[in-house]
Length: 178
Image (cartoon, rainbow, N blue to C red; front, side):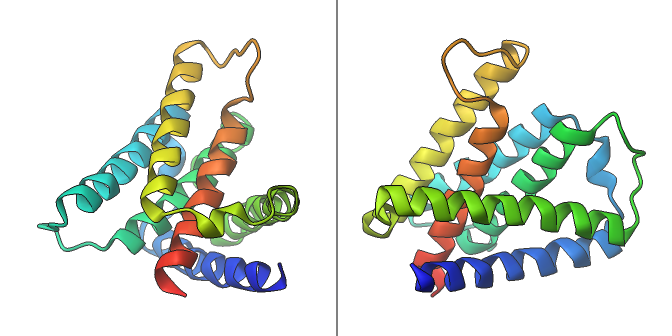
């Protein structure tokens, strides 16, 4: 499991660097988006990955790895939005954005370690295509929960599903890049 922790942190570091560079380029313009819009953006990325996996043809040229990395970052943004959309302004400083990003990434890492222990690193035997399907399933769950006004009767909430998508995306990136 030490190897997984190191690989995980390596992937997160790469995603974090992209997030921070885009924060310099764009500011925190993503703060204007409602959580449901971020859900849809993640859905677009996951659907594109599935299409590329099925057709084996990439006409846009952006990599599957880049799309999984984008989903990591969009999940972190969505979690930040769901926790603090009303509590802070639209424009955050780079330092504020970095701190929020790091807090969510650390929480995701700790969750991964707990689940990885209990599930015995089962993700290592999964195909990337299965991880993609699990992500799409989680997104459909989130969309249904959002359509239900955020209420669930017997299910995990939206945030839990975002964390799972984030971690599945990192697992896929470990499979693809390391």
